[in-house]
Length: 169
Image (tube, rainbow, N blue to C red):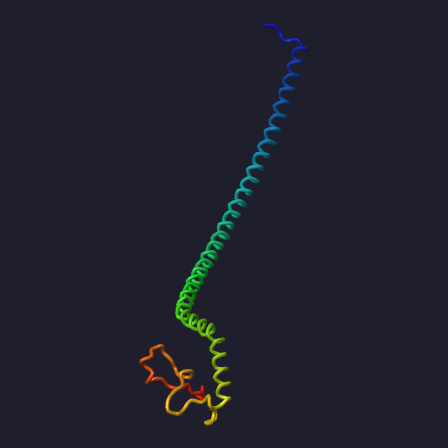
């Protein structure tokens, strides 16, 4: 074996120096990558922790909202039951008042003819009795057929009364 030539030694040394620089460069890049990964892992851990805290807060808020909605539901159900009871009472009252309303409707229907009848009776009362010497006045012994209350039965003529004006209404 022959001794290496100085040129070969220099080339080998240059190569070793280049390899050493490349190794140092790769180690620096590896360190930087490890720091980056470590920093990213820390950021992810903090972010994960923040997300967990936010989820816990959302869970508490959701639970509070559910509790409030359940309370509102109970209140609404109580209101519905109260309104249904009031509705049943009003239906019963309407059922009790319905016959009275129909009677009042009938009374209102008969009011105009009744008012005319009462007005006619009042007018007849104002006219007073006929004088005794009047030929159209029936004799006091019996009723006149024109003024008698007739039922249509001729055999009941003995029970007929003369029409008398002057009754107080």
